[in-house]
Length: 150
Image (cartoon, rainbow, N blue to C red; front, side, top):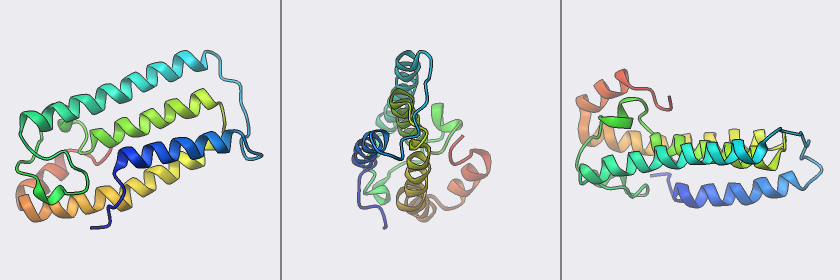
């Protein structure tokens, strides 16, 4: 597995890095009307999506440990997982978008893109490999029906 850093830790690291970008010469500041309100609303949506996903995993009594996807006991396909195969990561990205809005820095768009690429390569692809191994045809069918992100 390539996934070595839990996604919530990666979120915090990127959040700190984005703060430094916003204070640097690479900030490219912009003025966003109602930035705080927009940021709070986006953050709430991101948290809600993640909570809904965690509740589905809990109800299915399967692992939520992102470093051990090979210990999954069931393939969750209902609820929010019928809209995205990775709603927890969608929630994390929305939370970082909220942070970028609050920081009002165009320079952080690059940070968001790097975060998404890292999640894809370090977390999602190893998880997908584990799910294919564990659930085979059922997972392949699910992948054809539901997109990776949205």
